[in-house]
Length: 191
Ligand code: IMP
Ligand code: MG
Image (cartoon, rainbow, N blue to C red; front, side, top):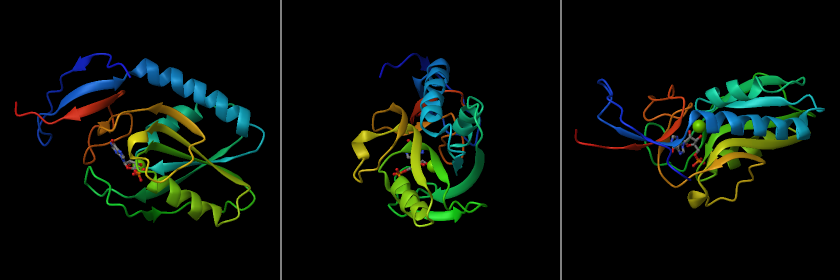
């Protein structure tokens, strides 16, 4: 995927002097979210789905996606954690916050920021499927195919990206950078 431009952050403390390289720009994201919303409408538009936002990383994506959807649906939230503050997956998934509503006989769309190893999505799918929903499908803005050791089925995928740590558009480095309107690779620098 082409890198659109270089972007030099001058982060204030407590952020280290990271250098950012934009991987997916704002307009590219906006266009892709519009396309995904049409695919979601085609598959779920008549089914009164529950859209599940996987906190925290998916909150920006979900906010943009739902505003493109013009059919009846509700939104619920859960929080899954596999990383803690590390940039490398611990391989262990925890459900830290559960849905508020029951999903039996309902069509569920799980919306993730990124599928990396696939562990989180795999865990969430089997957890939700045990509650007798009509269906569970998965939408992820980003997908790192290189790390996909568990074959996770992603029904709606925004972009496939290289195996580098990325931030922005909801994704974080130690809780920071979720506000960036683009997806960027983060490089450690000395200056
Ligand atoms: P998985 O279980 O390995 O697929 O990891 C999925 C979760 O790890 C995502 O929901 C993100 O919260 C986090 N994650 C994976 N890769 C990145 C990244 O490059 N930047 C920020 N968070 C990431
Ligand atoms: Mg996440």
